[in-house]
Image 1: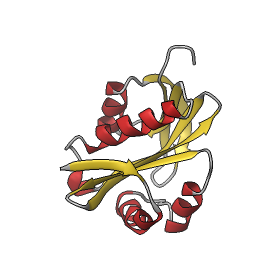
Image 2: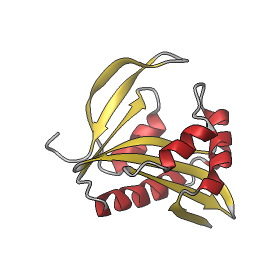
Image 3: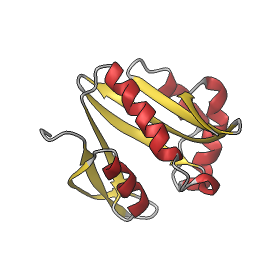
Length: 147
C-alpha cells in the first residue's frame, strides 16, 4: 500500500539515499533539511510498506509554484507512486495559494513527461543545456493556459 504525507526531518537521510542512487548531481541530506525549513516550501514523501519510495517538493511564489524535486526509487518506478505524490503535493500547493505550477524536466525523460502531461502540464519551452552530467536540454512545463 502506498501512503503519502508531508516530508519530515526523519525522512531526509532516506531521501538523500534515493537522490544518490538516481542522480549524478544529487541533493545532500543537508539540502533537504534546509529546504524543509523554508516557509515557502512544501515537500511530500511516499511510502510503500513503511519504506520511503519517493519524494517531491515545491517552492511557492505568490500564485505560482515551482516543482523542484520529483523522485521515485528505481525499483519502485512504474507503480503510480509519482502520480500519487504529485497529486498530493499540488493539492497542498493549491491550499497554500498556488494557482499554476511549473517544472523543468530532461527532454529525454519520456516517462516523466508523460506523467506531468497526465497531471495537466503543457510544454512551454526549452532551456538549452540546462542539465549537466549528462548535458541535456530541459523542457519547461506549466499548468494553466495563461503562462
